[in-house]
Image (cartoon, rainbow, N blue to C red; front, top):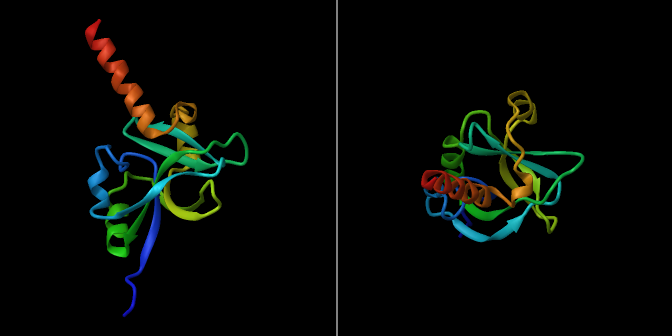
Length: 140
């Protein structure tokens, strides 16, 4: 009996558990929470529509996320649902393992001056902070 081919994918944005695009993972298997090696930066793209991460040679951070095992069909579907300009690339996790993640071109981040949110603690923390700010402003 042969094993169905699969891919290990690092999720660090809107498809995380509890985030609005989590259903794009379909019934993929959550392997564990994880962090990238401190080689990346995290930005808020298009007014918080989605994250943009890229590898950097300096001032990198560890980005928190989740590792999933996806069938090739689930992986192809996930990639088809990603925003424009995002592309799959192998990334290095904190423990040295390699997984695929969706990256965003650094040149587009710089060209559009998308805010660097690396210091906030990940996409879910950023979205929670945004929500709290909006709630506070609506009460004022």
